Amino acid sequence: MIARLTGRCVHSDSESIVVDVGGVGYLVRATTGVVQAAQRSPESVTVHVHTSVREDAIQLFGFASHVEQLVFERLVQLQGVGPKVAIGVLSSITPQDLQRATLQEDVALLQSVPGVGPKVARRIVTELRDKLEDIVPSGVTTFSAQVADGSAPADSVATFYEAREALVGLGMAIPEAEAALAETDEGADAGERVRQALATRKRRVRS
Image (cartoon, rainbow, N blue to C red; front, top):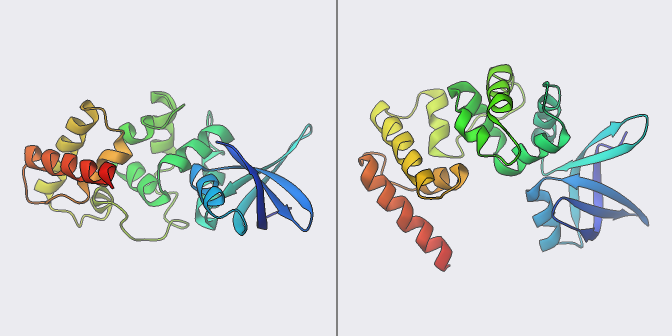
């Protein structure tokens, strides 16, 4: 059973990489983060691997960390969540924010992932609730994650979600909106946080 590969990336596309290890090329279907990292530094690639063995095929799925791999394995155990959907979720959402989404029943965040409809999003939120704490390390990656541990003031939580909804209405994807809002003033009202988030996005585009 292959658990990890370290070698040279000799080919990549939008969904997979080929890792050359000692002259043997391993085709790995990977998250977007793994693919982009391999494209940036193809000479040295390390990828954590889940090996799927079926009667008709052996498939390798690649992740940037062991935690991502474990979350993938929890996801594919759910009805209606195959490897393609699970890879898509981990390409769009960090394990920490996925845990936060399950604790706060943030179905909208899951529905923002391509290929995840409302029923599957609800199933992920419901069935993974309290089942990631043993594998996802504690720590906040976005302001929204603070909702999960109660460290965010109630007023700022309300304005965060109100501002996020407004930004999504303006065309932002939920992860992009949350990343921008993470840099806004938690004490500001929703309108001001939207303004600050748009300014942050504008600066990033320019850079």
